Image (tube, rainbow, N blue to C red; front, side, top):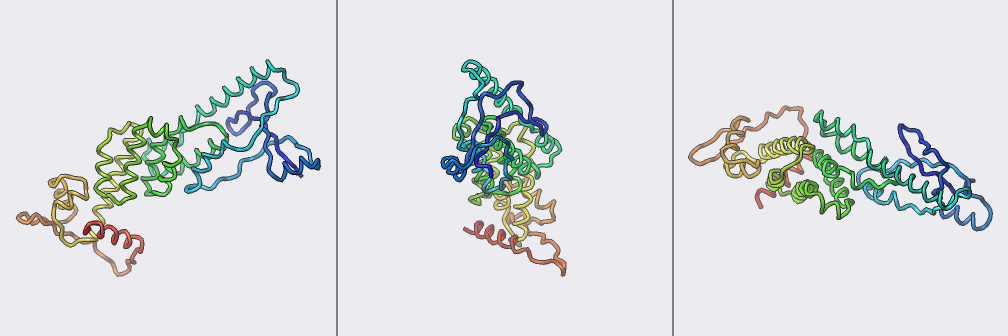
Length: 301
C-alpha cells in the first residue's frame, strides 16, 4: 500500500512530461489523512510517483473545482542534493516554466469554433479546457476568456452553468473586464425573464471582434424564439407589444410579422397571427408548454 505520493512539478507538452534539464530542487508532497496517520505510526514510508488527475464532474460543480484545484494540501521539501543557492536559482527557473504554461493555453479549438460559427460548441470546449488547466495547479484566471465562456452558456440557454461561472470569477477580474459584466447582464435578464431587457443588454454594449459573432447569433436566435412564443400565445396582438418583445421599432416589427404571414389592420394597429399548421401526429412538448405559460403570464402581468 502506498501511504503517500510525491510528484515532481514539471511541464506537460503534447501529452509528455518535458524535463527542465536539472534535478528538481523541490518536490510537491501530497498526503491523504489515512496515509498521514500511517506515516506517523511508522507503518508506511512515502514513495515517489505520479498521480493522474481524476475526471471531474462538469457544469454545476465544474467551477468550484477550478477554484479549489490549486488549494491542495502540499509541503515543499528541499532536495537533499541541492545547495541553498542552487535551490533558489532552480526554483526561479521552475516557476518561470509554470507561468509560461499558464500563458500558453491551447485555445485553438475555441478559436476554430468561433471562426466557423459553431457557437453551440463553445461552452463544452471551454468547460473541458478549464478542467485541464485547473488540474495543472497553474493560475489561469488572468488569461481566461471569461466573456466568451459565459456567452457560450447563454447561447445554449444553460443559465445554471452561466451563474456558477459568474460566481467563480475573481472580483478583480470582474472589475477589470466590462465586456464580461455586459455578458452577465444578458444572463441576469434571461434569469429574471426580462425579455425586453435582453435586447437592451445586447445593444447597449460595443462588443469586441472576438465576441460580436456569438452575440449577434444569440440575438437572432432569441428573436426567433420570442416570435415563436408570440405566435403560440396570441391570435391577435397590437403592434407596440410585438415591437417591445422583439426589440424592434414598430415599423420593423410590423415588417417582420407580415413577412412571416401575419396580417395588419392599419386603423387599429392590430396584427392577426398566422398560426402554424398542426399535423395529427404532432405531440405536445411539455417543456414548451411550460415556457409558453410563463411567457403569457409575464405578458399579462
